[in-house]
Image (cartoon, rainbow, N blue to C red; front, side, top):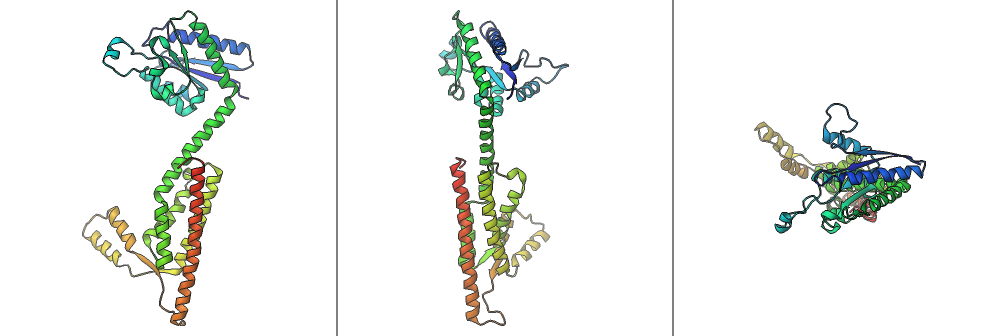
Length: 349
């Protein structure tokens, strides 16, 4: 079990120190002191006194130092009190906001740690929780009112409870956050894969091969691109079930591709002569021209009889090929559908 924790405190100096920065800092230190006294765990409190160049020699980059320290923290505490809730801004309905630097640090920490390891502190003296930015007030806020003489003791107790709760659940919180990160990764991979392999394009390519017994270089390249995409480790799904489903699909499309390659033959490539002529004339070969060229390069079945065949034999051969392609095409579609259903099951669509 983890017993060494770092707490990062993101403070602001727009409001009086005795009501915010110093008060919250003192409450944190006392809360941690009590927790250490009551447990065997060790806590290391990092306090951002000068945009967190504390304990850094020389003149380090302030922002880099802050983010470096957030990278190694376990619990992030942010003072999100409204800093501009004055008469002028209320009259002119200006946007009320916490300190911008704190918001930047908070956003970075949320992405890194997830909300379950974040403690947002708001001084009600400067504004109720309801006027905090929408994406902050939707989460649990630790509130206090510095005008209340009992506020310091109450805040200390609340912080102690919040930190203790995070520490006691730390391993489960971390596991849930990693799962969220994995889902985010897998969603991105699905979007990238869908961009090169949409269901409509897949069905069109299969239908053309099955119904008309021909395909194009455009579709051959597309089928190859599916496998090329997933050969790159960065493009692998983390979720095991998704990984299995996409591999099943790639196996089926490879089988379909192999049948087409063995049964279809390229017609005379007149388009290539045009491409060469355009290159010789100094005309730029754009992506649209390439696409048009790939779609014009046709591969089709030999419908005529071979020397040893009769026409009826050739017809039987072609019908048999069509039946095989139809069967394999259905298996490709089913494998793709299973992949899509698994994606939907995990809420990644």
